[in-house]
Length: 115
Image (cartoon, rainbow, N blue to C red; front, side):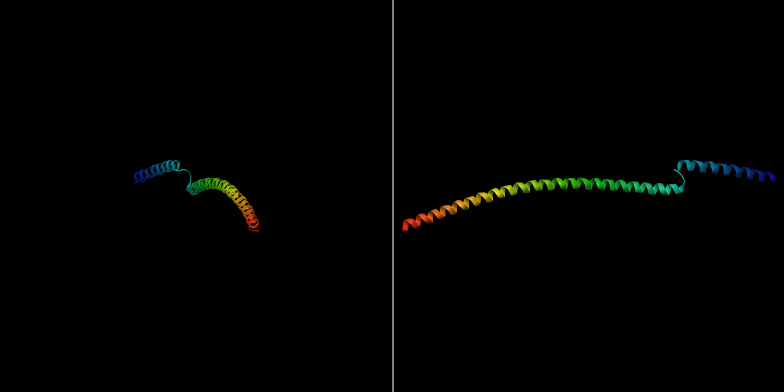
C-alpha cells in the first residue's frame, strides 16, 4: 500500500511538472499576460481607427484641393465672361451714342429742309 501511495505521488509530481512545462509553452506562444493582451487589442483597434482617420483626412484634403482648383477655374471663367460682357456693353453703348448722334443729325436735317 505504501508503494501505491509513493507511485501516486510520483505520478502526480510528473503530472504537475508536465502541466508546468505545458503552461510555459502556452505562455511563450501567447504574447504576454491576458491583461496586456486586452490593452494590446485596444491599442490595435486604436491604431486601426487612427489609420482610418488618417486615410479619411487624406481623402478630405484631396477633395478640398480638387474643390479649390475647381473654384479657381470657375473664377477664371467668370472673369473672362465679365470681360466679354463689359466689351459687349461698351460696344452697345458706343453704338447707341452713334445712333443718337445720327438721329439728332437726321432731325436737324429734316427741320432745315422743312423750313
